[in-house]
Length: 432
Ligand code: URA
Image 1: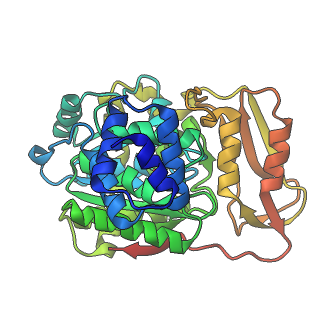
Image 2: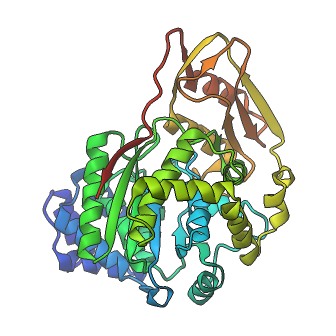
């Protein structure tokens, strides 16, 4: 067997065997196949797809390409993962809430991918926060304070880590089998026994419509079952950015404010829905509405906020930034976008906002790009809101002097109509 034969087979739209998938994952992880050949294979998978069996085989091969954690000493661990979005700061808010409610949180988060942000990058915007703990430290932290948030360690699903970065560099992110296998391989290797997945749907997500989002959810549920991990998918709307802030330290500030009770409505809806199902899976309550009440109480009492402070402190972060978010550095240029007319906000295309934030410095255009934690966009309005002429629509944050084009772009992205605009639903469907 060799990689050329495997590429040719997939190029000609033929099904790959378990052995072929295992071979290329193993050899690529070992560095025995060059990036350009795997890039070609990934591109053919992106174009021709993979069936359920191939996707499951790829998931299991990637999960076992490195260490598979055994978290049984921690009892029930419920993991959460999002398929990616713009302004998606849910992990930062939801996981401290879960820990404050007694659910063990041992979560590995990803970095930005394509136009979407990554929780790992956002956490690194907190000075001192150590996202790269060893597995032993990770487990110790969960035992000590009930929560640890780190990034995927080098040895956990290393095949996914390499393929994930490669997909980003060759524009092959939005593929159902590639996303399903990427997420589920990490979740299987990370050792949680229950999983809640936020399957984002809309222009700011990899799944642009509900049919694809459902298909992805169903595939991930099936893989979960196969791996003996109870999995629930919540399909959420990602047609406009989640909340108001898009960009790394801007989102940390919004997450902190949310934990203090100032939570944007759509963010609150996603937090409540995902959290209620996580509590159910953790055996902390069968009734979804009652679980939502518990979550609200935990936010109101500031227990979740204090848990977040404890998490940051425990991982070496400077908590004075969390206690007083004004301390976060600001970008050199802060440009306000004012409305040219009165009306109703019709559209704020999340993908375009994500790409714009990335260009301003908040994301990576190339694999090796450094992130500017201060860059991004803060919206003042959401779709359906009323706006008056000359009212502030958004603020653009950047350290790049040539911001004029970005300003024009943002003015174009936020569309205003003379007619009343209905707000879209945030929670679209639950797939159990
Ligand atoms: N998140 C992941 O971990 N992988 C993907 O492919 C997309 C989102």
